[in-house]
Amino acid sequence: MRLFKKKNYIMLDRPKKEEPIPEEIENPSIPDGMWVKCDHCKKLIYKEEMNEFKVCPKCGGNFRMSAWERIAVICDEGSFMEYDKGMVSKDPMGYPEYDKIIEKAREKSGLKEGVISGRCKINGHDAVVSVMDSNFMMGSMGSVVGEKITRSIEHATSMKLPIVIFTASGGARMQEGIISLMQMAKTSAALKKHSEAGLLYITVMTDPTTGGVSASFASLGDIIIAEPKATIGFAGQRVIEGTINEKLPEGFQKAEFQLEHGFVDKIVTRNEMKEVLGTLLGFHSGKGGLQ
Image 1 (cartoon, helix red, strand yellow):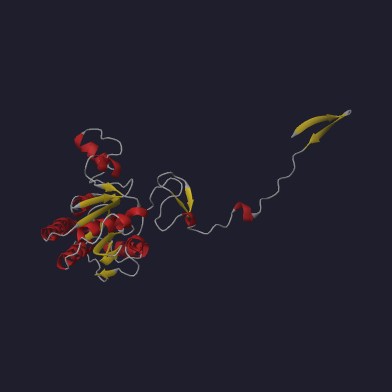
Image 2: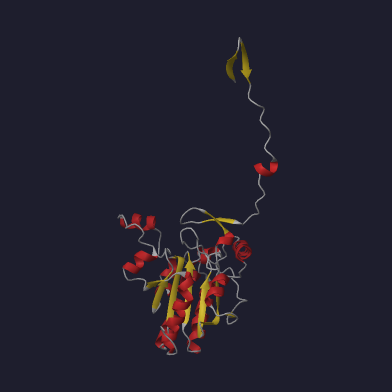
């Protein structure tokens, strides 16, 4: 309340009574799922601003893609034929409520397991592809993931085709214990036979590629490609520093650091990925190359 003098008497300047804010303004009706937050620049992004590659229009950072979204932008339209789509996980170790954990992952991702495999064409070149999906239990590698990837490698070997594997994983699936760790040896053995047949294997490391996946088939590619800023490593930074009692370089588990130190052959953006893969497959088949 404010006092002011008018002629020979004092008046009170009383504040006006606040009007209530209309409910539609106080609680605006915004449909769920229209906005997403970029993990790189921390800005809110209107979903309609992003294209099929799911790249932040503000900073160019990558949002995580589902397996089917990736297949749609990599494989020639109508060419993908899925393998082993009915394969589902069991409970080999009797882990408590594992069936409920799996069911929740299926509802969240719309997938039966953490990888989709099949045969396709990429810019007209035949190939077998396996695409991991981090939406299913963080792409963890259990018995079914390992088996589906192994079978896709064996299909590629029998048909004398190259294979491309898109990796996205937090590592081996703890709920399956030693069974999950055995997948590292099984996938690696299948890749050895594929290599001995003189066939091409391309790894595409996406964010994140870690744990038992990075320690097995993800690191065995004849050509290793990574997406920009992808996390690549085995254990977490704090675990490693605590083990060796040393401070590690900043960003040492990012794709750019891996490229600089020779672990990755090339970093490729999503909108260029199909063209680069098509070129590499063309070189291998002898039917194409750079124009």
